[in-house]
Image 1 (spheres, one colour):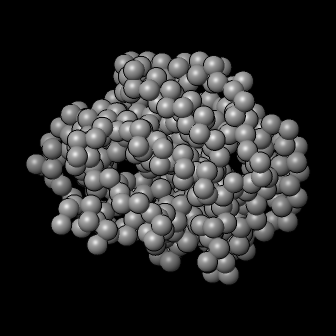
Image 2: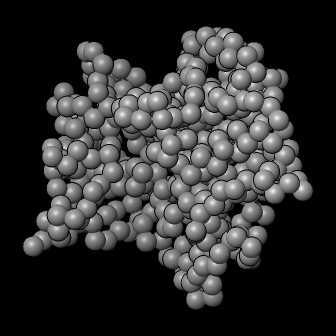
Length: 423
């Protein structure tokens, strides 16, 4: 029995309808921006394996940091103990995050980082003796698959089966160009009810919605409005964090500062699952009490895993190097040039670029399903061509490792152009 056959026999993959899906390529090796399957077929990983591998696969700097930590202390419980790597990582984060982020809560993945933020928002007001039980989010948001994160998400087929089992979340329009005033008015109307604990958003870019982008100016206005009504703001930087937008964090484009931030994905350079929720001192202080019941009773077995912390420290060191910063700028310039080259193509509705993120919207009739025929046709084409891209409906996006070279990126662009001839 082949590895692929064994995979089909045993494994249940995410976001997969196995009755209609093809067998999955068995990846056995990765190096830089490339992956190879069991038959030797080469793939360019043009989405950094779901946005987590900014420094490429099998990065020796990250591997050495992990090895060094494994040979000293692989794990220790964080309940009742602490350790040097987590202290160093929190100190480093306090230096590179917005200056109001003072406390760091560790968990396992992006969904749990959001879960912690939502729970802290609700319990803050509970601890204060106030009843605020609702959350505000954008339409078409995606914040994760655990129940709180899923409730905050607005892509319906992810959540349809669980309606009636989720906390109450009310949505406002995404403030894309021309929609800003409508969003501001909708948010203000909700805030005036004093029923909401928090407003959660993906800053500047909605990833799973198809890299939908909006301006820092309007986000500043929305955050300021929420602060005026004492509603917490949660910046979900799980996708955008650690260089994707051209700055360390999308919030670095803002004048306002969020009350909480959610971090994961590229946090450890794609090596070890880890997540962090950061908080202002004000939020932490609402849990700091002689009453034990006012503590935040949330935790994970692998909270603040020392090996993950060592990987994250090494990843941040890499991010801050001149070489990686230069690579981010170079990818951005290539994206801008490709957008200019293809924008007048008869099959292209629009393009958008921010940092290393490129998105192209295909001109089609009618609404396209998220996992519809067009998307599946494109995905299969790209895989046959040795390019890992995961279109969203009629949107093709690129979010490559920062170390992708010019030849590889040019191959991704040319394959996208070829794909447009199939439509």
